[in-house]
Length: 326
Image (cartoon, rainbow, N blue to C red; front, top):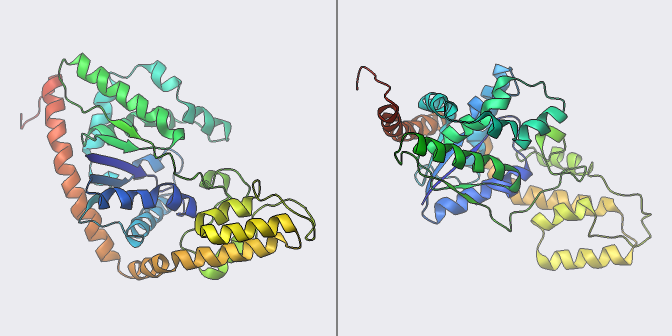
């Protein structure tokens, strides 16, 4: 099964990225799937014009995924921009995409509501997203519930293109929604997201991590009083890293009272630092070896591009677009 997924370099990696997607990628390539994972740096341009930040976050994501165990011998891990054919395919797909499909996209409306100044790229990016998926003839795409609509749009565009040109040019991808994937709460209880500025960075030092964790929002219940763990942000994060046995002990402490939220946060910071210590060590080593990271991206980009070029030959032939080669 050919699996494809991408991550946009729009900020520092955080533990929500890890529990929500990153570790799932490792599981998928370890199960023998043919995996394509890419850094969606073209997409980053819809929300920032800071070239330094785009380049920096692209490199950080590359180091981050390699640090947590993504194996470039088991998965094709590359930069979106190393496959320029994806932009060419975006134009072909745009010519069969009804405006109504894009106008109904919830993500665009949500970002406008967050105060992001709209531009054509922000409106149009689901077509680029469809090109990302279709150009590699992907069978399945891991998505969260918030991205399911965009995969449905990709499926609709692929079907429209195939029907328009009466050929099965594109595989119609299926969504892969893992029911047990955690929705990781941020410091304020909302979904952890760079957009909300409520994240716990994945590769910070132990000291910085603890400082951030102590900012987790909790209620004002006095230390001596019993507390509800079910609705506690600190406990929700603790569930991600603590054993079932330890969680049971914390539940009793919550119900008994005599415990402050600071105790929970302190333990949470300890467990997060223990969990990610090996990854942070690897990340720091890769930061000193940029040539290795660049070699991985470049060589994997060549593999991805070879497949993209095969797809584009079929697309050009189907549409009657002639080139010197053809």
